[in-house]
Structures are given as C-alpha cells and as structure tokens.
Image (tube, rainbow, N blue to C red; front, side, top):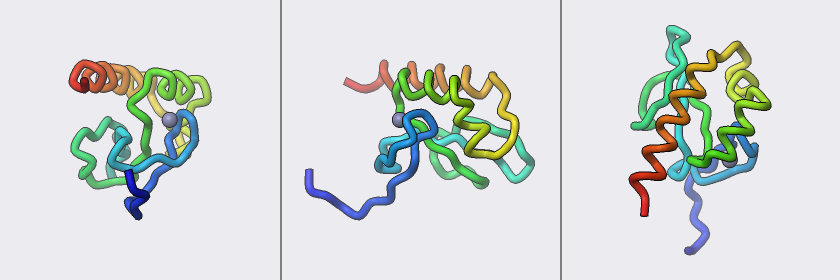
Length: 93
Ligand SMILES: [Zn+2]
C-alpha cells in the first residue's frame, strides 16, 4: 500500500479526496446531458463519487452534483447512481 502519485478527485458526497480509480465518474456531456460514466472515458466535465451508499446520500442531500456542475441536476441521475452502486456492492467481494 505504498503512496503513489495517482490522481485524486473530490467526492461530491463526502467532499474528500480519493484516488480517481476508486471513484464512480459522473459526466456532463458537451450537450449538457448528465449520466453515470462507468468507463471513466466519456468526453465532458466529470464529477466523482465514492461507491458508497452513504456518500450518495450525502450527495443527494447537499445537491453535490448541482454544486459540482454548477447547474440543476435531475433526480434521475441520483437514481441511476444508486443502481450503479448496487452493482458495485454486488460485484465486489
Ligand atoms: Zn465520498
């Protein structure tokens, strides 16, 4: 567990820095559509969330994505994130 120089990003839930590779990316496309980006490679502005139900809850309550994207974010985006987090929990040990 050596400290590496991998990039860190701010989680929109707990608002703490985490390695980018451990976070779920949410992207706002150049067209303005906001979606979960499982590949982490979609073009557009990205925001990040820990794959944790608690961080999602905080993000919802604090409107973390609206804060990050500086605009209104539909509740359906949080619902989509919830679905993705379920898959994370199911897919990992
Ligand atoms: Zn977090």
